[in-house]
Image (tube, rainbow, N blue to C red; front, side, top):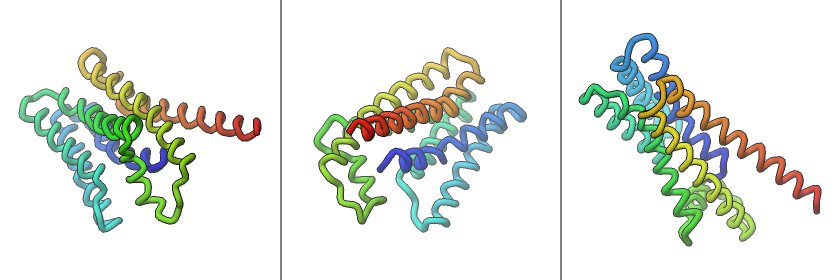
Amino acid sequence: MNKVNLLKQLLPGLLPVLIFIIADEYFGTQIGIIVAVIVGVLELIYFYVKEHRIERFVIIDTFLLLFFSGLSLLLDNDSFFKLKPAFMELIMVIVLGISAFSPKNIMLNMSQRFMKDIEITDIMRQKMRQSSQVLFFIFLFHSSLIIYSVYYMSQEAWAFISTALFYIIIGIYFLFELVRNKYLLRKK
């Protein structure tokens, strides 16, 4: 799975969080959680109808959304719902960690589904492993920051950290990679 496909996989999981932030602001936490769950389930249905299959990430994300939302409603504590993005990212940390630091490259296996006609060279495998290592630390840092923000920061800070900050960090990384690769090509 390349970086763009990884980002596309994670993007739908943030929509319920964004919906929660908006609904919570206008209607309160319980309504925000309920609306976010409805949006998450609708996303699951949409992807099933559109692609006639359900991606594992969408299933896992929807399960986490339902689980953490249920806990938040049951215990009347929105912290559980707010932790959901961090747990989804921690799952990615595990997948990236295995791919980056062990002989089993899960990310490569997943990407071959999208790149069926492309032969993966040893150089491509090495680049993918290096990207997985960097992304491992980015996801680990960001998920830790989300967890910290749930307990020690304002609602607004959590909202920014769990949504926009992720894309800013990833955007900076992609931009750095683009500039670095252009520099290396010119150097040759």
